[in-house]
Image 1: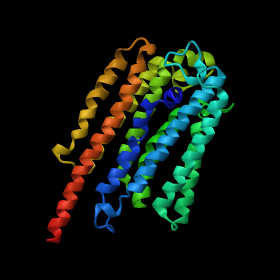
Image 2: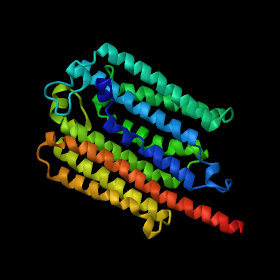
Image 3: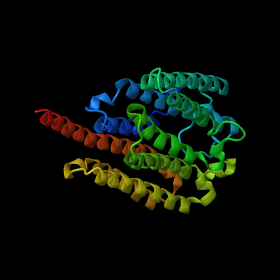
Image 4: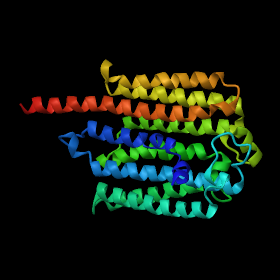
Length: 320
């Protein structure tokens, strides 16, 4: 059990649910013209199964990454980070393959239940669309490093992370609640996607040398370590700016900029990366950036909850 927990890489899980938290609480804090109260749009069942489905996708991705890199020999003695399960021999490739199949089925089941709670027996087109999206997410999580045409080996891993753990996670769960797309929510969705890409980019910066030897052509391998730093700064800073723009466009009060506290560890992280001369020492920064992203999402939802309080007060006063 200990080895399976390690293979699931628990430190990556908070990052994966950041979009679900933001998208769901935004739905709660922004009732539409046709909805009178926040609770009419928000569903705890949708929220709960969205979390389960996203966690399932993240664990599946971690298992598949362990399996794909393990059987290809990418995880070898040259690798800098913690030893993977197959690499160390504590889990066999056959056992990991079975775990990938089981996790895929459980994640698909969770996605189907989520879709049912969101749309019921109506909105067949929406249900079908999200079912296809869920299957695509599961397939993408596996194909990242598994198979001869694994897209992670061609530099497309950043795209997968940005789309599924940023845009789909945030905008998708919000749509499951509201059945609408709010253009403003695109800003934090992009931010969470970029910060998630930042974690992957750090991982690839750390493993640049071993990835190059193994033929894993990540973006870092393609552009080199120094340009990867510039790429890293650009995506993190852009993410930070977009959240501020989101707050301004939503007319946040001064006390609703609490999320700026998360910029302190993010700024320290950027300074550390800027000063770094040895990519092997970047490993601790993965956890720091992942937790900073989760902190940003939590603080942003706290600001949204403040908006919910304003809505409830206005409804009460309006009723009077």
